[in-house]
Image (cartoon, rainbow, N blue to C red; front, top):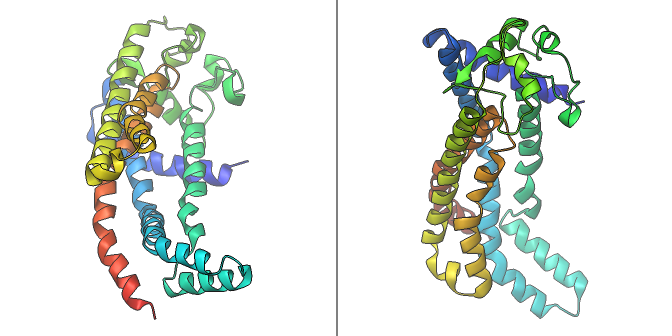
Length: 291
């Protein structure tokens, strides 16, 4: 149904993997790092391509704050005349070139890309039956391509190890699904403790990045962050609640998706200050254009 997303996602990851596969040594560990870097740079590629949408959303947020007092004044002045109120508000938005719908322009794109990445990255090992997986045998899943990934790529991914953990393994994965991570007929030798350790370590990176992002956000506006009970709850949730999510999901998500999450969190940590740094001059330019 979403092949128009699945194929481009797999093409980009495949391109990055082919690059890192030539730079890193062959073998389970080298292949594991090649696939990990391919996913990381896929995230960076997508976030770079979506930067324009992020800037549009951020500018809309700032303009909404800037014209908020004027909108409130119009509502008070024309509260008994809704037609005049609507005309005045439309005129104000036109002068600032403000469209509130642009605040949400990035959401459907992000959802589609994440859905595509989730599906593609969990379609190497298809021995499970969760989320519509077909419940193949280990031999079957190792003999079928995964969109742009050839059968050889699929086998290379399943054989790869990141610090000893298969990339599509997760902490509570049934041991019966581990057969796909080994050549048919080979003994299955895998430690669940290793998978848990690797998953937790990667999730910790995402948690730290989420915490640092929240701390920077609070530090930018300390007065509004703590000036009411509601704002204190929001700030404490951002600082100490949100970082717990990747830790909690580290037991449920495959290692490769935790890599995706961590890369995304680290990019956001550095992107947000850059975006905010561009906003004041843009706001002044927009304000100067109004007439």
